[in-house]
Amino acid sequence: MASGGLQLLGFVMAFLGWIGIIISTAMPQWKMASYAGDNIVTAQALYEGLWMSCAMQSTGQIQCKVYDSLLKLESSLQATRALMVASILLGLVGVFVAVTGMKCMKCMEDDQVKKMRMAVFGGVIFIISGLAALVATSWYGNRVARAFYDPFTPVNTRFEFGSALFIGWAASSLAILGGSFLCCSCPRRETSYPPTRGYPKNASSTGKDYV
Image 1 (cartoon, rainbow, N blue to C red):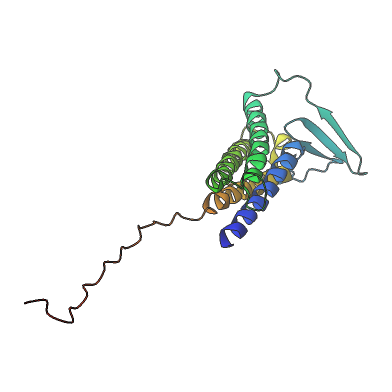
Image 2 (cartoon, one colour):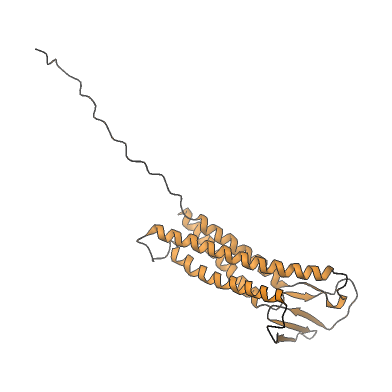
């Protein structure tokens, strides 16, 4: 029962992390315009994401523009896109594999060993998915931080971390932790020893058979 609860907890955490990775990938707030350091008065807030850039007016109106051409994008942005998409696809595979190996599911009940292996395999896929998202968000965040502290970057073009980065970091951590719980949920094999043979006791002779 304890391993079943750990398995369910791991799957819920990994699934929530996978959903968070999808939300982070779709959000345009991967980086936001910084107004620190100088008294810059502006009537709009600028955001940039993996797929579009947005400007929010002081009236609350948001205008977004999808990037025109894939070939015009920076290679680092294309690599970040690829890692996040790969993380989402791996998470989708991990969901189906882990569900198959869950103890509360009816499938593969006749072979518990294969069922446990499926759960562990699903956990490994979730860990890889979380690592891919963690690498993508950390790489993107490192680029934003380096550009922010670069003295040659104009003040009006400096950006800070957006909310999508924080969601991505938290979601990838959840996916990795949930996948680890899934890998640890299988009970350890108990070493089985052959039953001890009982040797018949020598019957005590009640009388002497000597003539």
